[in-house]
Image (cartoon, rainbow, N blue to C red; front, side, top):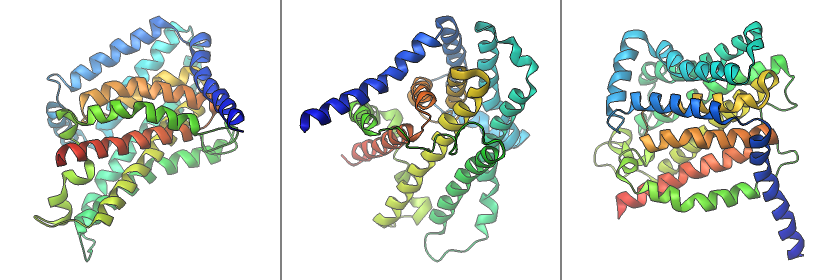
Length: 328
């Protein structure tokens, strides 16, 4: 019996890496990939000229105050997305996309949805201050804002899926059909030493763990926060990655695949990098490669559940690693 189980797992693992090999053989082009790496390196250098996120946050706050949350993020997210698709047209000779307004309207919609996500979270701050809570009002306002943020991205995408209903029987990647999660848990286990190692560096301990960084603000100065509240925050924090995977590895890959096939993967990864600005630079840099790998897997499997497991698992491991570093 154990031999049969081991053989089954081996086949699943081979299929898992088979997606990466298939993409490399069928669609990967080094000139295009290097063009994107250089472009994103320049974009990241602009946001982290001294290796920290302090300058970027000051710049962002000034631009948001001047132009508004929505417009600022529309440009921030749209620039790498458009550059990636323009590069795709050039390197893959896909100039026919210029004659497909549905494709460009979908691109504008995608960038607009995620910019609206940031706007919805920001716009909810003032109304929530007028809502009274018996205990820990700042904590509950933050949780509600996070839920609003998730809904602002997931609802428009789901409504679009209901309207078109061409790409899949289930909303972008929410299927377990012909899919096995076990290899993803093994990948997560293999990444554990690297995640914990990064979590112990100064760059990460200055940003993580998210649930403990603002205790005085959430609960009051000197208040010992209830453990169940912190665990609830971590649950909401983890669920946000469901919305991230649904949007990036689901919608941006599967919906765009009907126009460009696997060519949807790398532009998605460039878009994905831009949402990490303001986080530790190492995390932002690695998001391009991690996002690309998860995009390849979701494209060929048509499922985002593997990405959810890996993404959520890494996020919680980083929280635990940073917590242990701050404790010991």
